[in-house]
Amino acid sequence: MEKSIQDAANDAQVIAPFQSHGHDHGQCVVEAIAAAESRCEKDGSSFTPLRRQVLELVWSSHGPVGAYELLEKLRGSRRNAAPPTVYRALDFLMEHGLIHRIESLNAYVGCGDPARLHGGQFLICRDCQSVAELDDSAIDRAVTRRADALGFDVQQQTVEIIGQCADCSARGNDD
Amino acid sequence: MEKSIQDAANDAQVIAPFQSHGHDHGQCVVEAIAAAESRCEKDGSSFTPLRRQVLELVWSSHGPVGAYELLEKLRGSRRNAAPPTVYRALDFLMEHGLIHRIESLNAYVGCGDPARLHGGQFLICRDCQSVAELDDSAIDRAVTRRADALGFDVQQQTVEIIGQCADCSARGNDD
DNA sequence: ATTCAGTACGTTATAATATATCATATGTTA
DNA sequence: TAACATATGATATATTATAACGTACTGAAT
Image (tube, rainbow over all chains, first blue to last red; front, side, top):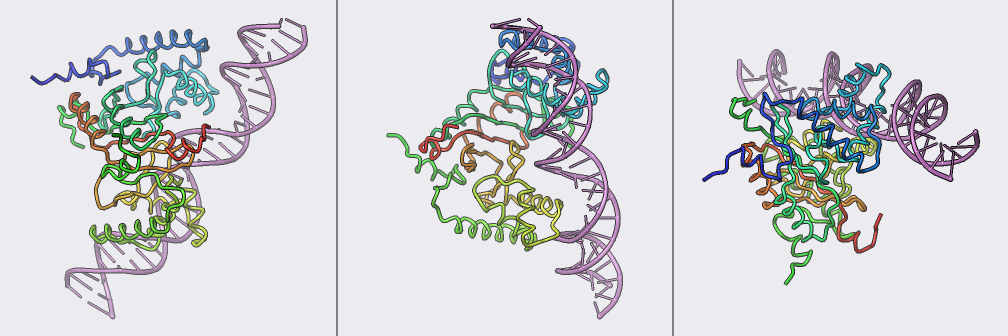
């Protein structure tokens, strides 16, 4: 018997699955902010209004968001926001594991589980721009094994898989 | 009995291992150009002097090279080279599998086996900037399995592992 | 040989992404 | 309250990449 997509998505190694079109996204944001507060409190670092606001903007979708896109939105409420305003907030959020950077897109995405420390493994849908975040031990092991065999000491993994998510396949977006 | 690093490096799934400090690099370049000629002939595409020159510059080391670094070197012989000169050549070389782009570094590296079509899996040494290129089926399988379980159709893998290579570990570069 | 289409490259300008630097404000600690 | 660290404001600039248009070359069809 084959595992359903839902089962696979519930697997602990899927940190954040692809979200259904009509899910309660407000709840996602609320949870992300709560997790961030808790994480910052634990770290003894200050989750300022600016940083909170940028994090909320990153979470405006489950897709990657560019720094200048964030800047524009930020300017809605902070007329004089400048690139460093955004980049400093992004740096803070990354240092504290609240967001990840998608290298292949020069963009940023909210972390689905800031409580747990982990590197980045992402499935990125070309069509709907949604991102699923993984912490797949099989991928990690395969990488580590090969690295070990070559005497290479792994410090940081970047795994970014571009393709088409199940929903978009079903919808027949073949572009 | 443990496999030696050399055995692991000779494994077919290691497309290009880390090179010893004193290897005959001229030979690497010669081979890369020969492979490129053969690949372009097969593709019916024209391996022009400019493209050859840019490929040679990419192969000036086994590390990733930035586009503007290439541009500067290119200007040694082509006074009026401009960004598009380099980027067009890089695009061509990528389309024909002669180089890979390292997303996490905005840089380019020669492909160790242009004859064989493959995505990008790279080990990148923070200290010596050397890159080892892999086509590790275990990594590929682990990715594919998880993607399949989620109904995700993989189109492009980006696997970039940052760390320290065996030589640099041995040399005790702990920076 | 001439026209034509496609390809490659030159040239200028500009877009998109990211950082450096110094000034100002705020908050914490001694 | 002085001293220090942290956070943000503000201006300038660095780095990476593409757009747009023009010219020259190439090779096939007429």
